[in-house]
Structure formats: structure tokens, C-alpha cells
Length: 131
Ligand SMILES: [Zn+2]
Image (cartoon, rainbow, N blue to C red; front, side):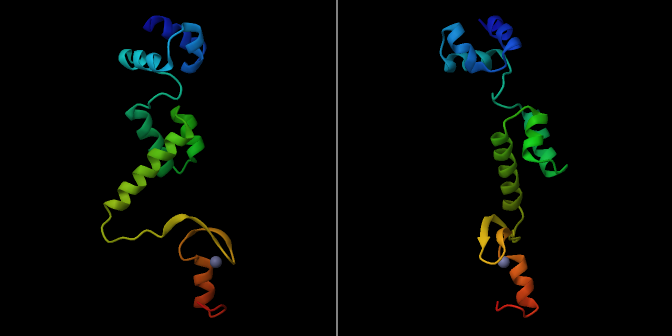
């Protein structure tokens, strides 16, 4: 069965498309692939893929989309690993409190990713608006 799956995957990279042709469940197909080390699109990424994708985003500055394409992973998977990596760095950084937060909408400046809004802080420091 593993050889049949390998042959089929050579022409069609998505495992789910083999389900109707082979007549076995997707879960069973995934189990066979894992047992025989068969790689397929959107499967579990290898450690090397994860390292490459996280490095591409955090060190090289690639977008998640570009890193995902290069590492052969989904964008959401790359985003998940990059976020986990950033959280682990922050968790190990002691008293440091990161300024980055989830994007929120400043009433004056729109979508911003630092809290408090850097532009508002600057204007307040110059005395142009009330803090
Ligand atoms: Zn603002």
C-alpha cells in the first residue's frame, strides 16, 4: 500500500485526493504515510522545515507567506511556529516587557501594533495633545 501511495503522490501531491481512488479513510492514509515516512503536502512538517521557516521569518525577515512557500509548509503552520518561538523568547527574557501587542485601533492613528500608540506618545511629549 505504501508504494501505491508513493506512486500516486508523485502525480498528485494532496493526500486527501487519494481517498476516493484508494477507498480508504484519510486517517488511515495519514497513518500509513507516517509509518513509512512518506511526505505529502500539508502533512506534519519536519524539524528541518520548521527551523528553516522560523529562521527565514525571524532572522532573514521574510514574510510568513514567503517562508511558508520556501519551506513547503502552510502559512498558518509557519505563523504558529513563529508565534511560539517569539513567545518562548519573551518568556525567557526576564523582566523585559514587550511593547508589541495584537494590532488595535488608535482613535487618532488607526491600526497600530505598539501600546501605547507611539504617535500619540510623541505628540503628547511635544505638548500637542493631552496625554
Ligand atoms: Zn495614536
